[in-house]
Image (tube, rainbow, N blue to C red; front, side, top):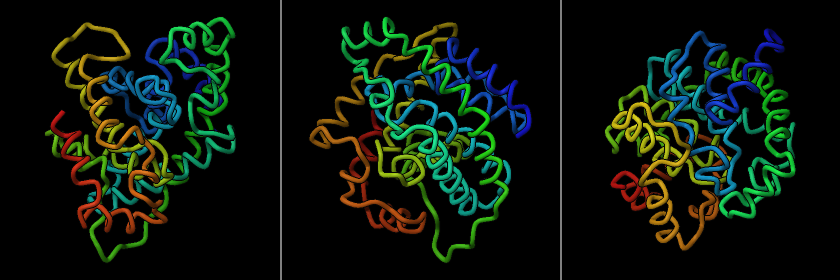
Length: 275
């Protein structure tokens, strides 16, 4: 595994500067010869499992972002690029679960960071150091997983492949490249059925827009993000998991695409895009 030591050191160093999501995004993206400090900064609201809600670890969101960006660079055909991004994200989820039993931040830290007491517990029990150890160990594994996945050519699909996260991005006015970067969030990151990927995409894009309009600012939760989450929870009666919202999990990118093309999550996607 190439550059294992440097990836570990850089991931640990960046963790305390841009958060877990930005740190993993940076080291995986750097492996592909890329760097985008604006994206790293805008990933802050995904740390702590989306606005510190405790859902998928921010490292997974960041790795999926980097894999999606690289899938778009390698594949000219949007269908192929989307399928590759989703496949790479699924492999990243598998890689992470080999390292930790749960993908969820709250399970890993055993802290509710939405509460003041939970935040105090997070720091006094040394959880930041635990996260630093985890990101150092998983960073080279994430790079290896992304490398392996993105080297594979997906099978050709007879039907168009779409991602709920990319559709939200397009509706929010994002470029094709940006929408593709988010494609792997589909179905709760790599179709894993966890917290909604469309929500993650909307939260990220909202932060990106806010930072463009407020250069020089440094924060992890930007104005408007909490309101977006509140509206999302009201619409779904408090449910965030893709598998529960959709009433199913998706075995393939084709299954997910068919569900979305047939109107699945249409109301939810429109809600997020209008936030």
